[in-house]
Length: 116
Image (cartoon, rainbow, N blue to C red; front, side, top):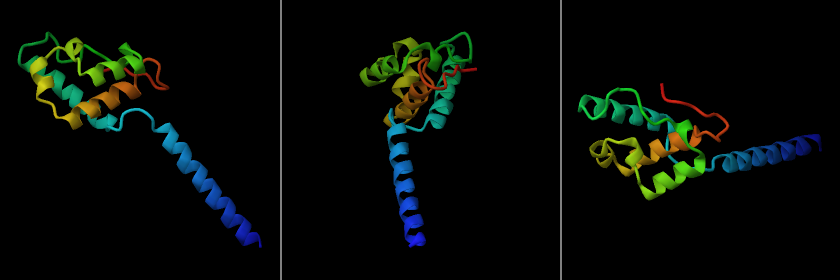
């Protein structure tokens, strides 16, 4: 009897944790770590092409709120980033990863971040 109760509690706890993670995972489905790497790579290529004054990124995730990043990436309006050639060369997957990075570290996210 006790084993059945423990097994039932374990199943319920596992179900609760699984559902909690599903709700916590809202936002873009890209890989935020790859997005950070790809974004820095784009900034570096832009600098090497002579299109920017600095190799460090001029736009940071904490510059805008999540809803603002959502609008920018859904409309695919990347003018604020500059370097149009580099952005046009990115695949949809790379853009999704960068979007995930900016969304998850936006100014109103639990962990706002800046590019350094």
